Length: 200
Image (cartoon, rainbow, N blue to C red; front, side):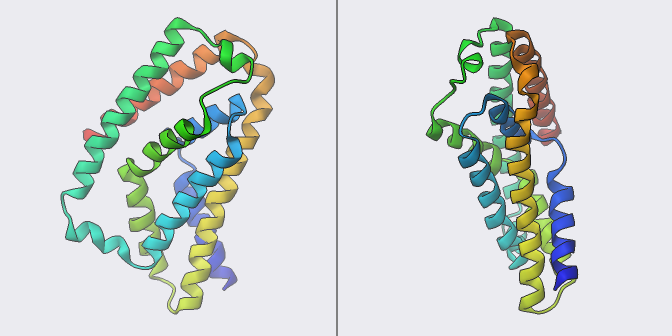
């Protein structure tokens, strides 16, 4: 049981650790200290649902709908391209009065953006339904599969809440509009790179 849970935790953590659109968004919200708890909870809970689906064997869904990955790739790339453009435009204008005073978008628009980053990202399905689901087949029996899945889910919760609240450590650095411009420029370029990667 312990080995299965530990394997699940390491597997989940290693897959989610890579810098991606969702992680960059959580980092940005953490720096702004805006809706951090609900955002981290949403991202981790979304991962939990997908991990559960992968462990339960729903990875075969892609085999039933071969065109699904391509559809998700184009939809995700379009969203990333638009969001990246928004961040670059924000960096160009340099108007960060709201961020510097601790004000950002309302909760629901923030969660809607997080939902797009999560559910329009084809890589999340590959990681959770595919890779996590594949590794879980090494463990036989409901108890071991449950332990493995729980470990992977725990990794998501630890990662997102650490990223969201840990971003506050960078707070003193982000007290100028210039720092926010650098951050948004970096995020915008990452979004465009990810969009290109999705459709290439």
